[in-house]
Length: 188
Image 1 (cartoon, rainbow, N blue to C red):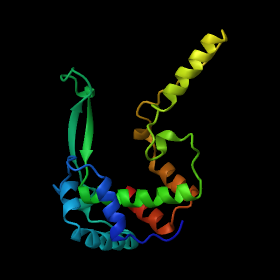
Image 2: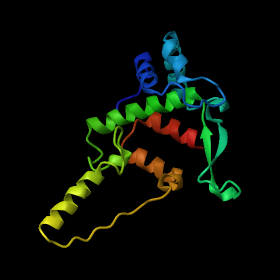
Image 3: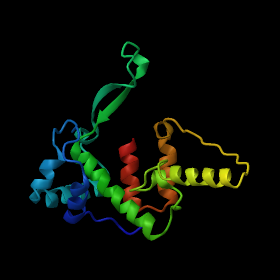
């Protein structure tokens, strides 16, 4: 991966794609305002680049506000809640900028298979295979054939991915060493 130099255009692109009014973290900042105050993009790009090179972030960036959201109608059982943590908008912007750069690297080098819909930007995870399954089912029924199929539901699959594996994948995909070191620091 080429060296990463975060530009105001990178920040502007990430901010442009971000939803306006998602719940902000401790910074209380909505993307709506970042979209309107474009003069901030150059300052953020410079600060993001500095954080990347120094491999450090202010503690405020990685401190979130956690909310307990009920999983179903049973609100008396504490195990029926899931925690949602709202991270600061600035941190989300930084990580989205790095994610866009890594995605560009993966796409230009054709690292990920087209079948990896759940991990690919713009993919819809399991929604895309459903029409394919429906067509296969119709063909099997029409031709009076047998079909054996299995679907595996990885419930909470990404909640249990250890940081050691994430670090290894970033290394295997040959992400820029500055980005790798920065992300390792953030994971700590």
